[in-house]
Amino acid sequence: MIWTTMILKTSNTSKQSVNDLCSFLADYGAHLLASGATCIRLDKNICRIASSYGMKAEMTIMPRHIHITILDEQTCEIQTAIASVPDTGINFSVITELSRLSWEIADKKIDLYKAIDKYNKIIIVTGQNKLFTILLVMLANASFCRLFGGDIIAMIIVGISCFAGYYTKTWLTSRKMDVRLVFIICSMVSSVIGSTDILFAVGTTPEISLSSSVLYLVPGIPLLNSFSDMLYRRYLCSFARFTDAVILTCCISIGLYIGSLLMNTNLF
Image (tube, rainbow, N blue to C red; front, side, top):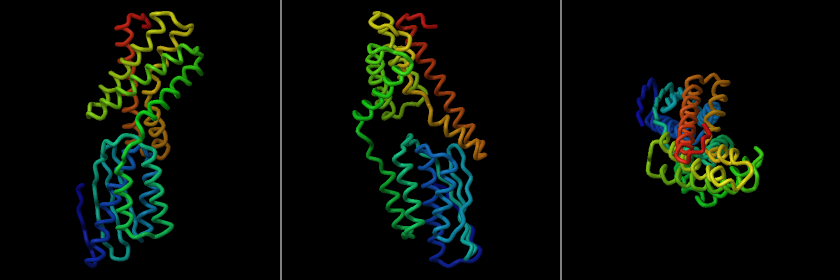
């Protein structure tokens, strides 16, 4: 956190309050952005919290940083804070809880330091049950395979390939490996398993089995967020998110190609 202060007329109590609010909002916005929130949600939530404490907030949202300026119109104090966006990964539960906190501050007028305490509890994510999450991802991917015309054998193979790939993704991510390399490896693992339907001819829709095995890696959320940010005229964030999504999609294609070469499926 980097922050600076310019005071035109203030008291010590007001100075401490504005400093803490600005620091809190910068961290709040950084975690909200890291969890997968759109720019419009950041703007609305932060302005809602600032106005609840009788202050005005202006912000610049960058792909890797949040720059916030708080103005106390009564004391004419200006406080600026810059926070780096952490690599926490997308988490809709955190977005929901942080948004609920902003409404709680606005509706119940809770104390700033009580709000900060609640915020600190929210961002300490204990994580969901990994096995349960993997099972849900397996079912979702197998369902996509069925929607695309896959038979029951293809669905089973897709479920197994998804389990192996997603488990690999979780394991590699926990070891702080570069996300692009993670996508290549996971796509390769899933495509290798998905190729078994082609190699052993156990089903009637082997191509669907292979092509559906990597769908869980498709970066749909960054793509949707980039479109939302573009509509809200946050072009820099929109372009950054779209670029990330394109790069990850290319990584999926590379992993799928490597897996097909290893299994000699002649898909390409």
